[in-house]
Image 1 (cartoon, rainbow, N blue to C red):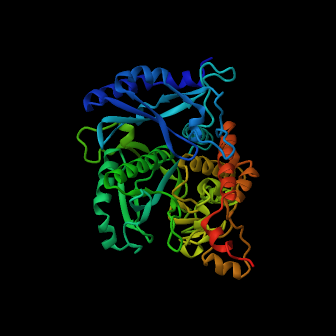
Image 2 (cartoon, helix red, strand yellow):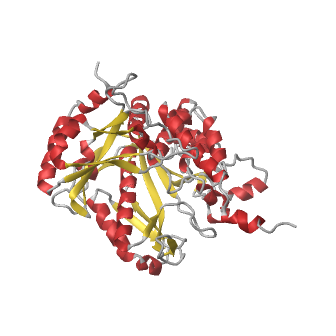
Image 3 (cartoon, rainbow, N blue to C red):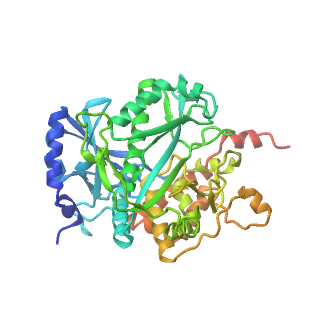
Length: 490
């Protein structure tokens, strides 16, 4: 019986794609390739290999220590997170359909990879590496489609801040003023924005709109929604692009949720819907010769949107599938918060409630005080999420919540039209989201449905990493401690 690794390499049609990549390598003059996968925190890790070795690497893969899925970082006790030095090395197998040239260095391309256990492991050799969040999402999505006949499509709104760099290399404030939607401040960042757009279009992102948000240097540049895996890959690519543009302009591309108090944080509102049918269409984005494989430029269009209102019963309310999915998300929102708000700093955003950060597990139409809102007919905006999140983990968690909502026929109740704070003053009881990373991890630990999005080793590695992050914070004396207590007695 073939191992998971062998089945992946020998999948129908993959050999043809491998040969098409060789044609692209020759056509574009590629000499080097970044083989990249995603760590549990959303970082891009991997190896660089000369393009001469494409065919062999496509078949055999490359090896890297298991601990790279946890950034190869150590905990506060000096132990490597997730995997020790005695662990085997994973095998990364490139997914040829994701091959794309880097527009800022045309000699280099990147390709996303799926990770497997080593072929020589005593236990489950060549099996899927369960700490590979991208590989997990593909499997979760396939399972959901097979069970329900629907796919998840996502659109993300990645807010981030462009910060000036001081002489010491550290942040020296935002580049622009905190004036929301002001074209003058948007224009001040025009050279940066145009370079980001140029690189994004070259890597398959169909950019649709953007604006200046209400924090210093804060921009939101959005791209077209698509199926869950491609959307996650594009958000990862967008972050990679912003990091490169920051190097070119000697700025800092900051995806930290809350670098400044008293102004808005960087959220990453995630618009979600379930579809059946439709087809992939190549969007060339102005390219005569595509600088990557067709799938990088594909977008899913058409089909039936199962979140659309059932107008026979209500002109605005989503149909039965949509309501069940809202019910699933609301029921599991506290545990999902550990994924969408995944850092200690994330909870600065939830505490600073004057800036529309959602802290209650409720839903409504165009109601930004709720954790989930119907932002337009046929889609929901998941709001308890910031720009530090790992999109692959979040998509996996949402699929598990949807599945549970559909299976249990969950009813989310009536949508809340009032400001949630006014509703609560009027006597409404609403579950509050966790307000610290430690509390969110506790809620995740006690939610068996959302824990399914962390199979086997993924849960162990994620909890090791995040509990250590929380403990490091608790064990740290901050400037606030000193200023508050240094002369408190006598």
